[in-house]
Amino acid sequence: MLIAINNQNPQMRLIRRAVEILRGGGIVIYPTDTVYGMGCDLFNKRGIERIYEIQRRDRKQPLSFICADLKDISRYARVSDDAYKIMKRLL
Image (cartoon, rainbow, N blue to C red; front, side, top):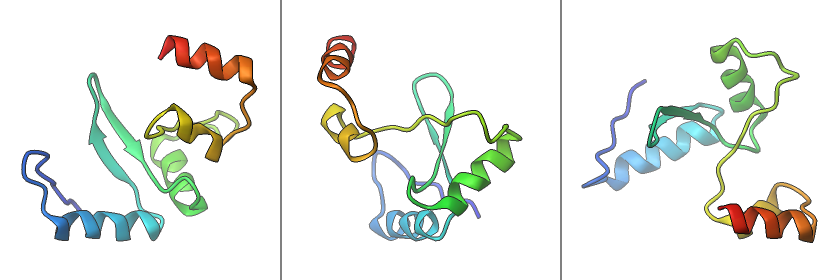
């Protein structure tokens, strides 16, 4: 299913539908500065498996994820104070 959301004038109905798809284990494709990204609900195993399948990626290769901001990373990983300071300096 293709849902195109206009970033200049997003329709809430389409955003809600995209959220439903993500919660159901679906994936989204989105533009970045250089390429298109593929995303899913980080806590939905089905979505993660779909990304591995679509990319034909070895399950031993980790996936990257995007956080809203650097403070948000603590929800997903344990980060030492030193590592946090380095990330903050580089990002």
